[in-house]
Amino acid sequence: EVSMASASDKNAAAGTGSAAAENPSATSTLSDDDCVVVMDENAAGPSQSLKQTELDKKRGALALRGKPPGRPPIRRSKADADAKAAAEKRAQLNKKISQKSEGALRLTLAQKAEIVRHHHAQEKAARKTCAALAREYGVSERTIQKICSAKGKEKIAVAKASGIDTDSAKLVREEAQPEVSRLLLEWHALQRKRFKTQKAFKLVTNEVAMMTKAENIAKELGLEWRPSIGWFYRWANRHALKCVMLHGEEGDVDMSDEKLQEAINELRIKTGKYKLENIFNMDETGLLFRLLPNRTFVTKAEVKAGKAYIRSLRGGKALKAKDRVSLVLCTNTTGSVRIPTLMIGEARQPAVFKNLGKADKRWVEYTNQSNSWMDAQVCQWWFDNVFVPTARRNCQGKILLIWDNCSGHKLNNTHADVEIVSLPPNVTSKFQPLDGGIIMSVKRQYKKAMMTKLITAVDNWDALQRRKKWVRWGCLGLDHGHQANMLDVARIIADVWRDFSRTTVAKCWVNAHILSFEHEEFLQDWINSQQDAPRRVDKIAERNDFVAELVNMLDNWHPVSAAAGAGMYKERSEGGGGFDLGQAD
Image 1 (tube, rainbow, N blue to C red):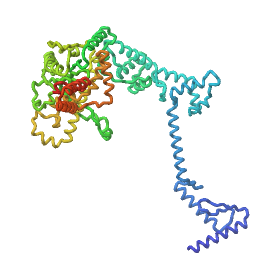
Image 2 (cartoon, rainbow, N blue to C red):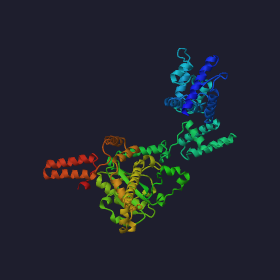
Image 3 (cartoon, helix red, strand yellow):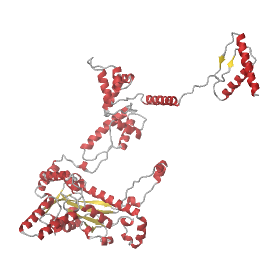
């Protein structure tokens, strides 16, 4: 069969050649599909009909496979295909950008204003064409023409008037309700002015109040429109408004009151008559000692589960525990003398206090009251049994105690060397040092210590469960993986108050501005000198070093050494070392 096929091919080729010789009008073409010589219809040859039939079959097969029967596609390299795909992607991206930026300002306001100034300059030499500005800023000439047009200049003026940052390149679009926006902005400016000057009721302009006012304005204008939360935040961003949190009660203090200024000046003069370390401030606060944080972190899979799952997460009673104890804090200006903290609870003598060590008792005192609050009886007991003995033991000379005008602070002062001064009403948030950050710092350190104990208990949970059966139920606390009890509160507060930063105390006194100018300047210089020093000092190690120096002097006793020892002690005491005669003994 092979020999017959080759012979037929030879005969076909010979017939084709003879036909071409006999018929000079015949045309010879080369097909790209099968490289077979196809003759003209009039050309004669023995294999013409056979070749034509094979060609038709191949064309039909190509058509069935979805390929055109003509010239096959040119095969390109992989680099060319990647370049073509990248070009198509860039074209799609540019199309999206052009659609998104249609009718919007792409450059910053400062750049647009500069473009308009250069294009419309009065001097011909300083004037620039749109083409030159386009090359300078790297944008199209059409963009420069839109910016320099009357409509573009109007948009720039509106954006500047709305208070948008000149360095902002955000899109500036026309507002949906421009009249409502304008009236709402005017109303907000009026309320902010009243908030700063009005002494009685002050309206807080949050998103609820602003959206309610916007809806009322729309009704007055006869518009069937209600503002959405998205519209409000876009409106606030357009007019450069930012929502902030209001802290404290200092806004109620009227600094323009002449009587208040006169009272504060008298207090400044009076503090100048006392030694700096002999001035004390006292205040009480409530501590929810069992309250736990109500926020937690969840995994990404839980977030994807949806809002319904997140809302289904529930806490326990510990997240809303209202168990409270009152703390009475008192310290002098330098923080060198910190009066032991008084804890006021409901129980007369908590059973867990049997385990309270002597070291903690030096920094914590306890008494009871039916509601765990400070009243006149408790205040009198604290003044006679806690404050006066501690202050006399650590201070020389007369003592000044400053506190607020609370009704529970009315007591009978029988101590001639102690003077009590009450601050004017409703000014403690501004002029009381303990309210300036000391109380807040104590509470934060307590919460941190409580969470540290709970984390340690969770890590050692199995061992705690084995030891728990040997502990009385009423004495279970943070160390056993339970809620805090009064013993935990006493120990944590004692540690916090013992190691409290003296620099923090001094800063709060300076910020209160109730000391004389000489005392305030001296205290500020001391704060600046302590910036590079460690925040907390190991009092026990420092006291031991001091006692060791005294022992060495006593070994070589003579009058000169005794005088040197007395001078060293005086120098350390005046330098803020924090020593007292009781500690040295």
